[in-house]
Image (cartoon, rainbow over all chains, first blue to last red; front, side, top):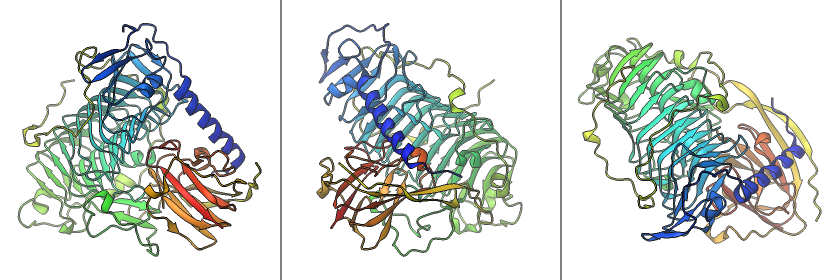
Length: 458
Length: 157
């Protein structure tokens, strides 16, 4: 039971605000091994603003930047919490593994982009923040490339209420919520490509996000659970819908001693778990070694919900109506998984079932086809829930033992502050010379060209 | 500056914790939720200049002694509330993320709650006794001028 302490709470707020301002305005750095020249140069359409040669801190350089500029950061450890509110700037580290923003478990976010369009962050590391490593919110156009985020208190790399984004060639570990998260957008127009998430509560989580949201060619391993699109009325834009999850390597997400929010504990030991999502396509992923399921479509039960499941999703997030003030909401609202397509995946070594669906009947319109699997709940799932024609069989024939997913004791969260330090990650090519390109809409992505990946040999 | 933000009526309430409900047949795990109440306002109305009111959605007008603003992930609902002086607003955190409430104008004395005192499932109440425009935000997800998690309460005479 929480005991309210208003006076200390106010002090905390004041201290928090002071610390944020201090972090933004006067953070220190030890970038002594900087290799940059000490002049501000012009390259292409924008300038190059160098830290610390021209600006003492990253925040100082960001504040001085104009649209089209590049903020170039040399090797060093930067104890900063950077806020970005200028459109179309690029913030780049010269060395992904040696440019380290360190929150020292006191600052909230490594770099937070608020409402600024087209901001790209490249080739650096953020660790030890109480909230997030890299965070975009309320933006149109964003990109995170060659980023490493580890041991941050909420998310590693995170976008919210933002559209037209790319996360690529990046790594997120040691976060109790998710290594990668996209939330509160539809249509999102987001591509997550070639990322690695491990030792998180959830490798990927996305609440109420979708609409051309593609998660591809990435690795999710050693999390409590791998990829978990989910629905809830505690964020806008419900239900989650229209994700394409294709060509990912999802294995050994049984890290039961890792950091985890409650939902991660609920979802743990599953590879891909669609919790109350609609219209998702799960295609040609390689999934191996999960104590419960490889891929499962399950309802998400929400207590204290503010709305009930709609008969039809709004066309866009902006079109979503507010629930009427007199709406009677049940104590628990069950968000169903509907209209999801599971096709062409290869699933092995699942403790409960390689494929699972918790459906009361076929009206939820989920379907399974051309998967390579050994076990399913319910039995003969591709016959019961085919993608063409009418299914035959019974949901009562070995139904998904959903209680084993939910009604179980799970280990409490581990400490995000002490999770494994990642090995060095691949640098951005030509970080010193590459042209600064602000973020725009994600590139066209050929889903059909993505094949099932192979498992690592070790 | 003075204010009458004395704490009153702090109480504990039980409630369902954030998530972790279960299936239809299962009960959610119960854990602590809290509620605290304060009252007050600045001697002069803090007229916020960082959120142009004409850019906000039309206000939700409440003609009652008490009303509720939800802190969801990551926004306030309703974002723009219009109430009469003396109305108590209960801010209820139903999100899964951490949230706090900080007024843009530091002279809005007494109107604030830190994230440690505003966990998921808890409430914080404030009685707005003085007319004015109270802009506020969550420092974790916004600044006074940017980000989704900002709100405004217009208090009329």
